[in-house]
Image (tube, rainbow, N blue to C red; front, side):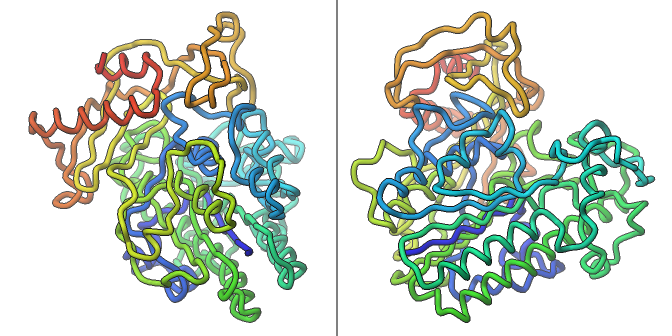
Length: 486
């Protein structure tokens, strides 16, 4: 048994031909349809990057109990379980958040890993080397931008780009292991995450403007009056060009699988963690606004040898389902911890439903539920402090503040902590879900989520479903209080 997972960061389904994007040049994403199941209703759970990866490892929701942070000492990791069962696991990635305080325990769960430096604001090259020559005033500003330009001094050609080096390392693993059995390879590319830094040959395909004038790094904020339709068109072209670069190198992996007849005995998963707003609904970014479909409704492709292949699958599925699917495939599902996800086998073979609902959100933001027809987004009703239940009190690039660390509560073990006692901290949140209020959409009649419904009977029904789901997940009492359920 062998498996390859090609994971991209910030890959929006609305920019892929498989999901209706006619203007995007991505023939290899289209080519996946020949051998893979294409999922129509695949959703993220915990947003954004590292919370999504915790779900990938554990098969459990993260966002109700904790925000961004490392894998916990009490956590189950599917990749650690595969190691224990004799499956060799290897990670290649240029996702720099793995190597920071807020993500530093994920990559160590694999047998081996290889990381490539230089993406986004990766603290890599000395910042004194930076020369910022972009003239577009709309681009993001600040320390990460300075760091990005310093890192670019080491990136002279497409082959130097961290994502391309990641793909190449994945190809080298495949070459050395094509005749071996019992392995899992995760090829994880930070692209097409912003900044949308991409070689000229791809930018020319979309008629992008001169690089020094390009709007290529959208700040996380509402679209301001200074941003016009032409600006949004320009930044979308930059994003599309980066997807086309990712597509070109995905094609090399598919070529290798074709040439070595790997479809016969190797699972392939192509996935992402979340999408992105590029002006839709007036937003830029991904983490401060309600979790609309642009962020949480994801592309997902999977090929499983011996199962019914290709075609569309409509059953509701989520990121939490990937871990149990891997365990099922490798015959290692016995005796595992209780997961929120389920193996996708039934969906692949019969498009049989697994879940009554999808739950998703970002820590401190709306708590969202989708029952296959309606999406209900429950905002905070009060300023009840936000709890974080953890043994790893870190943020993205640092630790909790001294004030937060000074007053922890020891709480008994729960389902979330696998019955291990943990600490509860109270942290401020940058998210103001009260600003938007509760939202309800009929996804059958209103797939673009443009009309907020006010049907009180339907609201009550969705509230009951959401409350029951939160109770099943043993959500902290403060989360019930914040959402007005207690």
